[in-house]
Length: 267
Ligand SMILES: [Zn+2]
Image 1 (tube, rainbow, N blue to C red):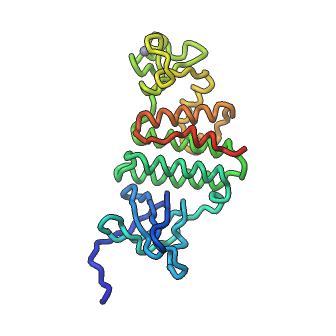
Image 2 (image 1 turned 90 degrees about the vertical axis):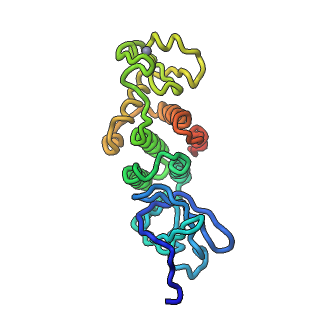
Image 3 (image 1 turned 60 degrees about the horizontal axis):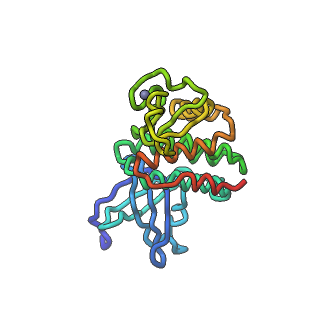
């Protein structure tokens, strides 16, 4: 065999989280694989018309692929579509939040091989849910993104503490007032006494309404299906998404400003 290749290769189920062009005909493809987490790969000749599988390497497609170990980047040598989502790229808001979730996965190192299968499943649920949302329903898109981020934080061990005071552990005094004190820096809620000893900077303490607090508790405890049935005050949604985004940024090292995405949403 003249083209026998001695590079080790492997097969894997993956989702495409980011692509960009390289040189004249190649494409860089950032994947998240079910059994190993993030993979940086290159598809050689993917942009040539005669490419056998270049057209399958589209954002947010789930593919079964064959990959050869390369020197710097792994090389995709074969790809079959498992599932593609037709309604994402045509809707700005859907696309925006799919990009946000992809960036979160690519920029955190939390999604290593050990967490990969559950995160892969969560990504599938997320893209599938986003695909089904009616065009123009920003509320459902934001809600789904918020749920993804919360589940991701929980799965990787970064969920905020909401049942008792994060500083002293007191279970009472947290919900005493109509407003609850949430601390991004300390990673959860503060009781009245601890809150009074913390200075008044936004990352240190943020006042949130009982309504919003109940919503935050729900997003960290409900399953995907139950969550989609929860009705919430729409006005709370962008603010809660920004708060949880700020929390994620502070604790996970994923330097991504969720607020910028929320503010770019088209009416
Ligand atoms: Zn306390």
